[in-house]
Length: 210
Ligand code: 13P
Image (cartoon, rainbow, N blue to C red; front, side):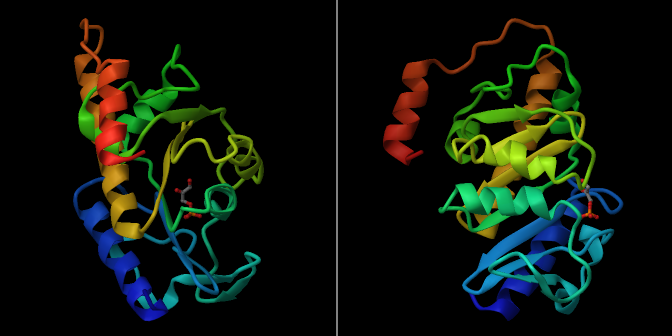
């Protein structure tokens, strides 16, 4: 995808997320890997009203080279690109239900969104919980790099989800799937739940890939 098309695609999908309530105010940020660097939404911008021409551009070393000042969460994004060579886009949201789970006690840090439905297995995979750090703290990048690329998606404790994927459309779909699964989990609450079995998960990976 060329840079002009990539800018338009970030603005189009960001607006779609905003209009459907996955992002509010100036929460959330989205990035995309280019051949010569990265595009990332500017800090304090509203995902509903991005000007494609003002989206920030970073060079391959992560230096800001064009557009408005980049998101303060740039470290989260670059940590995914560094540790997952397959990552072509990263989406960070404060979407309500995934964020609710990130605040709960007793969540399993190595597997915080259980395999409730096939699509969360197919589109998101296992999700790790990363300990709390303040927004914009470079430690966030260090904590994600420490996962060594084993997870395409993480929940930041008391903050929200960060999802990576091969391109921007599939990454947005994965972020939506994660949020809707979190909503199901919160809705089910303390009721006894049938999760997919290990065999079910293995079959999904075999047929649809990891
Ligand atoms: P930015 O406005 O710097 O992108 O930060 C928003 C956000 O989601 C913080 O976590």
